[in-house]
Length: 212
Image (spheres, helix red, strand yellow):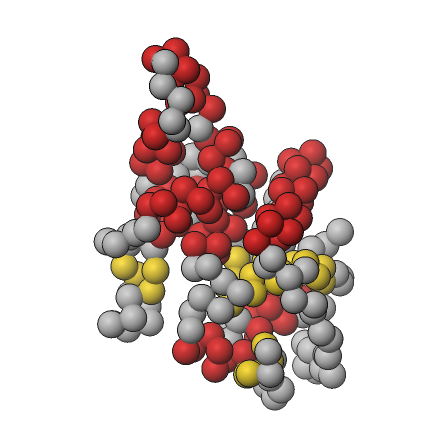
């Protein structure tokens, strides 16, 4: 039987819509369809009356998908957030921040609360040195190596890095697939509070898959 059959819903613009359901019912498949990923079967997803697969293929920053297992690689935080698909080569080629917008990366990590988490030690040093412009903290954070699959970050930090990477594309629609699934209750609660504040501040349309 098909994973999804006869699914139809409307998500309001500028709001966060939660998608709940039991394990294996097709929540992740639904987000993948809306992200324009090629999947077998019949049917289609539409965004603003355009086929999702066409929207994503023509303009990658319309829809941004962050999946439940962030694929972080052993490089700097800047590399991990600002990496992009090299449109001049094959779809599998990754161009690691050769022309990264550093100011936008800082904006993204601030929006997700990651800057506040990772920058505390450097801010204390800046305070002792009498500097308070944040430049030292930002430089230190962006240069930090995250480790293979983000092993140098906590679960909450990995989730925030994944959302920051998605925000870097400046999407109109943000698709989040259980990005907080591995967090403890307290961290998850804070993460969701920050996410709601982010949605309100940036007027993002968010589809959020969650198990609770």
